[in-house]
Length: 293
Image (cartoon, rainbow, N blue to C red; front, side, top):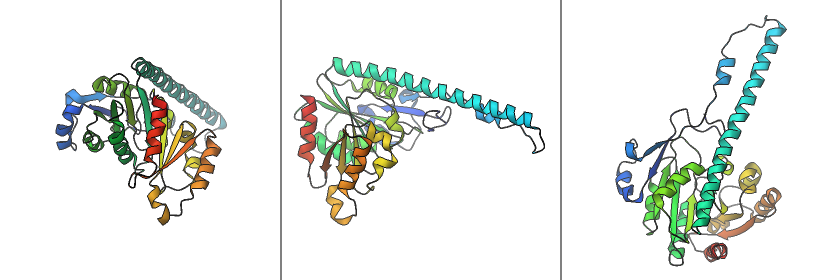
């Protein structure tokens, strides 16, 4: 498992970067194995310390000295795991700064869109692109564990897109984004949307080099999401309360949700949006334009 967030297995985290011109071919073979020329192997450092420490056998009649040795070894392993985690995050943060420098050099405004699965993130992005693409160059990096379904939806809007399939991974990291940028080659003065893997836990830990992190929460999810997953709300600048057209049919309390979210991050901004009816979309586009200018 990844020592940072627990995703994946050693040697099995196959990261696939799919180019726009390959999307139709990949869509037809989305259930098959990655092609060799499109596959980039992504392996986290691992320690197997716990496995070695706990494999020896002892009975309850062993003396106290043996238990002291066991506890000392266990403590040593935990310390080693902490160092591995710090190393992973330091490398990611360094790559994120390189991405950020690239974005600044090309005057690219990058947004990291994060949410739970089923929040309507891709639908919101589709509606956003249709409106925004006439105002500025726009491009998208799509992140999912498998399939190119969302990338195909984005491509239908006429916007350049690259798909990252993370395999067993539960988040995008800065290195994956760097490789996707190389394939996408965003134009000067672009707006880049990075749609992260649907997960409110692990993506909060990984800076991708974005200028703004936007967390999207559906009203079907419950008001206590900020209290359950505080890291994501602490690291986001904007929270979109999505699918507001469903509010008449649910018990979701918008004000209670805002109160919980502000308890976690008192600088968090909010927008209420329905992609289905279009309510709030103008305010969302205006928020993007404000930061673009």
